Length: 361
Length: 239
Image 1 (cartoon, one colour):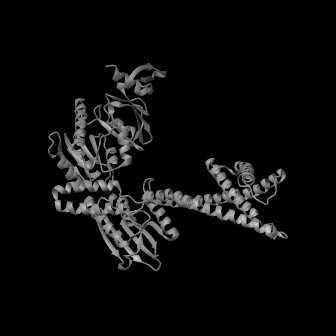
Image 2 (cartoon, chains in turn cyan, orange):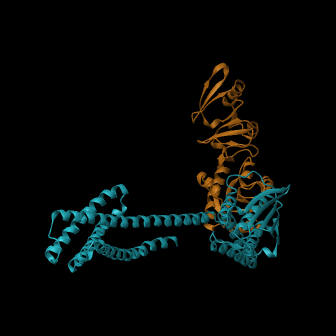
Image 3 (cartoon, rainbow over the protein chains, first blue to last red):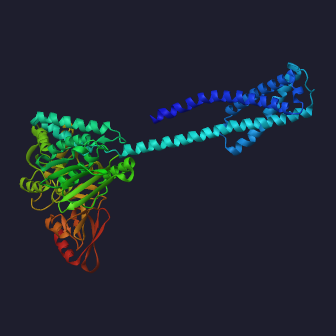
């Protein structure tokens, strides 16, 4: 998605750019012409100066400057001056402005003295030619300032947008990495057990294939930034426990105590599954006689409190353990800020309790 | 080959028995669901081959093997254990991933059969450990089956013993005195308080100070034989 968007953006902007450019050119140079006429009128007895010839001259000047500024733009684009650093751009731009203004004056003078000789204008004078060139240079410099100013602002804004998009993409990627995957060790054991069941109890094998499908679908379906309802998550935890039961046989038992009112609360997918998996991996599976897992969910005033209890004791963790929990903590932080809590502790000599608190939104 | 299946999952054991049912080179003589039961059954049934799951309640597969003075041939079975598999690949131990493919199983059995035949050719007393026996050694992430024939030196390291074989020298959780009591005295000789040497690796012997001897091993190690042991050494070597 993010990639499509960033591809589409420049085309869209360019189209808008060229329209905007022509509007600015026409309006800008018209204003310039009208301003020049207004300036003449403001002089004492200015109205006497305004002859058809002078008006024609102003229009020719306006159109010529539009033409030359457009050629200048063409040159700027061709030379890719927009990519230059400011300190390299400014001298080029100053020189460019002077050259363009000079050429524009040559063009105008050629028009009004040779191509379509105008009535009632001063005869050619070299000094005033350079005077005109200088004053047009100032105008061209303003044109260039506006042109580049606009592009710098645009570029800054685009950078800003790109930065934000990048940040969002990064967060999405982070969540994807942190997403709780189904433990492959569990998955292959489950498949192996099902292969065995196909011989001894085909009906049960069929049920287990359904459980494993549900679990896989669930873990693939939800992207990590989404949340699921508690009831959806509990369904999957039950599928998971059914599958673990065939691995652990009589050694695993479990009970649920769920507050009905809490069933619609939104939680991160695979969060409870992870806590139950940990309870089995570090608790039940270490006990030769097996044990019981209790899963409870209680609605409190400002949060949903989920507890997973198992028999056993927490010991010092090795490095590899706790990656799942660390990821869950990171996910909680991204999704809920500091409002979610996760806590695992020995609650008595033979019980480990994992408590997950999800804020009610 | 007489095989013992060790796996905590009942269904997994059934599955493996089913796979082995039609093979006439393997005979499943028992099964165990955890390490304690397995150790008893190994002592009682003396299998040639273990199918051993790594992750089990209580002691895991590696810990089980470390408790055995003499390890039978082992084919590890594992669902998915990234770290263990790295150790396997590195040390060429045989493992099968569950669910097990039949052709991989056949291959593993062929290899095991060759090794078992090799071992039974090396005749030795049953109660002591000789050149045909092997120990399982795990040192951090690495593990090996080390044939006693490959061990040059056993050296005291507190209550542990460091063994020298090939270019490795890992430790095993046994005292040197215990190892001495179990090893074949015709092959392994207590050179001094710290070391036992494998006589097959001796290259050269020189008289040393005050009646002691210095032994040069094929791989360049030099061992000083204590005065008391030097007398014994001369007796052993002079017949």
